[in-house]
Image (cartoon, rainbow over all chains, first blue to last red; front, side, top):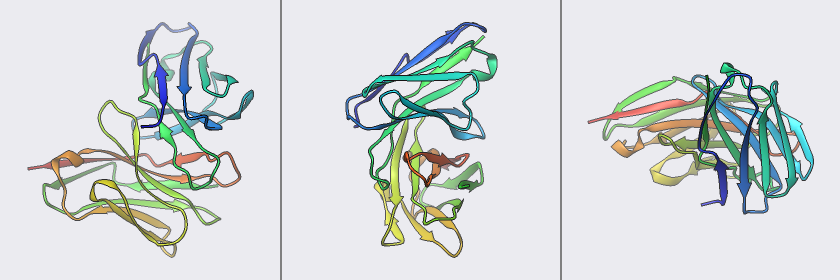
Length: 113
Length: 114
C-alpha cells in the first residue's frame, strides 16, 4: 500500500470554527490533491499541489485553503466551517508520469454541527 | 473540458451473474481512463487503467474494461459476480494539461444478492 496517512480520521466541529486536515505521504510524490466525496457527486477536487509551496484551486475551492511547506505534508484548512462542508475528505498522491495511478488515503469524515 | 458520466447510480445483480457498469467520457484529446473501487469506510483502490495500447484492459479481482473510442465509453465488466464485489465503483479521466488531476464520475453502487 502507498504510504499516505490522513488525520484525523473523524472530526465533529461547530459552525464557524476553523478546521485543519492533514495528509502525510512517504512516497516522495510530487502531486498531492484534496477531494471531497458527497453522495451523487462522486469525488470533487478542492485544491491540489504540484510542489512545495505550489498549489492551485480545484472545482470546489470556496471556503478552503491549503498549504504545502514540505513534500510530504499537504494541509487543508476550512477557514470557517459551515454545514455544507460536512463531507468525507480524501487526500490523493500521484507521480509525474501521465499514466501513473493516484493513491488515496483512508479519508476523513468531517461533521459540522 | 473533460467529463465522466456513469449511467446508473445503483446496480443490483445476482451472485454469479454478469456485472456491467457503464462509463462514458468526454475528452478532446486521447484520454487516460481509470476505474476505482471503494469498499465501505475505506479509500479508493485502483481496479484498472487505460493509457495507451491494448483497448481491453484487465484488472484485479477478475474485472476488465474495454476502451471504445467510437463510443467514448470505458465500461467495466466481470463475468460472474461475487458477494465480495459489493462496493461503490468510480470511473475517472485524467485531465489534460498537466498536474495529473483526475475527474470522477458520480459513482455506481453495486449490490450483489444471493
